Image (cartoon, rainbow over all chains, first blue to last red; front, side, top):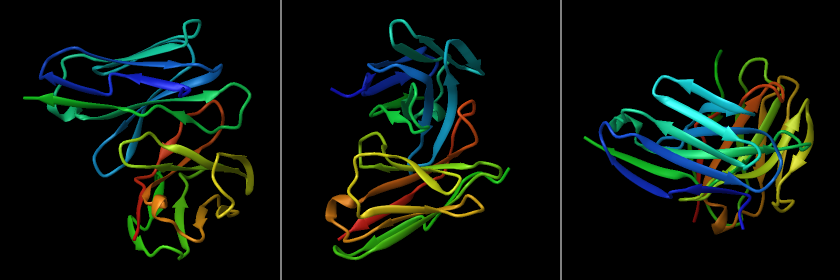
Length: 110
Length: 112
């Protein structure tokens, strides 16, 4: 079993829809990251969370430490949001490396 | 801020050869970590360097080795390349546990 599980693996939405991507993890963590990866490989860090909720533009990330679960929401989705969204955690007490989920491929259709 | 720069962007090598990938950290960042991402999968941690010393390693064989230089740039070396080493290799730099990571765009390695 992977330490970080994401769902769904693939998601297709119509422009304007509200999107939710989920991440569950099985280890104690000091931080959780949401990342965006476009074709070609470059990764952009969207959020780093250790508790609560963060918002940036149309993106919202939440985390429930007790339930070991995080969600990434995209409001008013747009075709330019199409990318792979990856959840990654930094385990408590470890060095600073991240453990990644396998990603969610999001396609937003016009 | 200059971001994280990786070179080369693409590389084709023959099985059994050796390869060196390079990463220039974001200015001021003292920690560099390397990840291998196979097609369709999430990145896997290879190792991490903090102030020129390795301070974490994932489940990769010793033929994967690295260096961090005084300016905090870094190299990933892979000896005796195997076909399964074909992947995107990502470098990420960070300053502190309190901060996030800045990722490079990766080096796409193909072993034939």
